[in-house]
Length: 447
View (tube, helix red, strand yellow):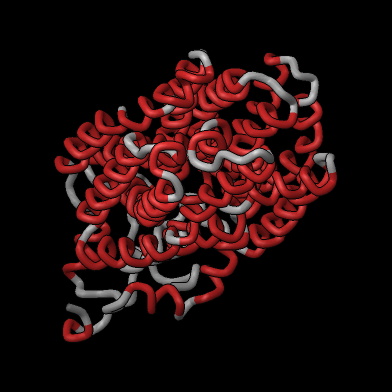
């Protein structure tokens, strides 16, 4: 539905405060698990998997193979977004979110138990790719359902804050995953590569149980219940999204800067510090952990600010800021000073990337109506992830390997910032406005 459609998101229809708290908690804890598992894979792809699953005499070959496996997970994200989004838009957010958390938890636990190349040969990387695909399918359906659960419970003038709290959950996930990896990376390399890296993966069982308990208790969103009672919306939510392609196209393009920038700074940055600069893995992981701690605070700060002054000024500020600091971030890495490496991570990721990432899902959720919102958010967000962030570590490693310098990586990030800024300027400002309402259709048109 276009931005100027009719609306029904009146302040008086806001759900009780207890229901809002439950919804935010259920959204955030699930996002924590999903991104704990996803970040964990990215960190392991940077510092562990080249040696365990892709041993090679050429370090660059092992690194590229590992990052290719990381990228593979993004291939199924749009598929998961559409399939799980269909479930969420037709049958409820809760059912879809329970499915995503179970799939991700199982895949991550199995990765932690997977033998390496030296134990089972080529079967090891093949099984790793299969489990990575399952992770990608699950993650593809998570964010749209989680953000819809949060913003559909939120008062109109606090949607930015509610949506950004999910990124605080993701920050907790990054903090825990990088903290555990940094802790076990202090083991002798032989022990870390043999069993130390596996423990953080196996511990996702604890988050899986906690997430399931919380999500099973949360209720459906009032917005979805009202739309279902009116029998409004498409029989196939994807059709509704594709009938209004403008929002989807700009919704894909505006996220390139934070998607590329986030994975370049955290995932490739960790690899660059370890492989190219020869610093211990614990330095890169500790810097990532510090950035995650800053993210927990800054994400809701940016979200609340966007509720006050608008999504566009905050997002565009982050976009311009990232383009300005991307080269200084790598210069700080090259000092090989652990404190300055952490400063670079915080400046590039927690400050400027997060000024965009904290708003992205809320902006997307404000573009689609209730009966197609999860599908629209998932498709827009995951297409951005595939086309932008998924291949960012691989392309960054290839660029540095081909040129021997990081200037190509900087230009790559700046190009993403330019594209995002142009797309964001084309999108409507929806801060504080009611959510789009589905078109009312005859009862017979909907099952």
